[in-house]
Length: 581
Figure (tube, rainbow, N blue to C red):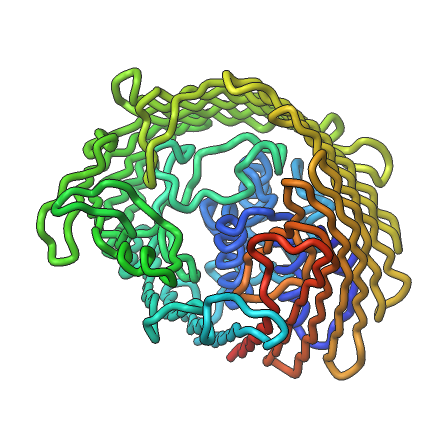
């Protein structure tokens, strides 16, 4: 459930605790595991290396949640006028388009430090993370053993950044099922990245491995915009959606050039030297999953070129792909993957209040994919966005065939009244229409959020309330409703002295062919939120202990079923440790 911005007022014992609290609040917005892991990885990097708003580049600023293109453009103009001398991050409130309500939540990830000319010698900063997951004997599933994950990351100033990640899920036969290494060097006008990294360019139609949740109109109220950072390190526990190779970028003033190449190990069903279907997911526990593990690798080489002149940016992408066996033998691509050689064109025009952007593949009509967006922002009226898209009948995404579709989306987000904010979203396509309405209220010790959504002839609703009577105690409760399921939850959080925090919750659910999203405390490393089926009560408990730069988290959850589903949830315990050096 959503934890409200009011929780930021908690005075925790040490900085690492405050940072993890902010990560928890931001990730509570997400209902998609992949998006949560992407954002969690980015926020973990920024906890180790906060972004300096007096020297950060445009691409770095745009990666932050709620820092959209309107605000970042105005921030850079104001920074230039001041000579790079913001004294506090709260001076950003004076800039048009600033995320006023979310700014306190972003405090652990940004600083107002010295400008580039004034910065001291860079220092070494490191972070160690370890996590364990196992089953308690109360209820078990078929996946035995202990799951674990470990990550070591660090940086020297902003020039050198690296990470090493290793992981194994419960039930996987290998001692180490996933290993990832990444290094990035950032110079004044050029950068190079080696190891595992992600690629995104334009609006993500052609290259979109690292587009985040905050680009989705229905959830954020913001239309997609042209991403500025094409290459970024892959330092998460996600086992697909990246390249393993080398990429480089050079800034030639108005012209930016990025070259990249590498291979991605892909799970697939193969017959001889032919790839039949792709099966991304990262789990290798069952016999079929083990048999499909990394049976092919998709090699990719490409380039991104963009040119800026005043308020306009235009660019293009080009990419060539091949499928190889683990021993580098040639393999035949999936039958519907016709676009082994592909390219796209994109543009973006932006003034202080207006933004127009678009991207389209250069392909035949039945293989094309195009997206165009229009946005207007006003501090009083809010943000208005409109987008239209078209996808051909034989358009093929990175992980499988996508049926053709076309439609439009429109959204508004802004202030409804004093202390009230809201968002309206509407979409119409050849698959039907959908609408979402959100409202949020915050004042002192109280916070409320409501959401109603209609899609596929189904209505779902979610309401949540939080009460924060003092620095030590927080209560949260809520209601989930749909035509096939409903549930109630309540959770309490106690902040003790000496860095100890305890949290416990109860959730009643009843489903009739549907599902209810489980409510549970945030846990570093484990972003997956289970879905509840059947009928029963779920209990959760978590302890967090923080001392200086070390944080330890312990979480467990058990479900008491009145009506047992075909796949009941096991009783798990999870342990994680974060050490900041």
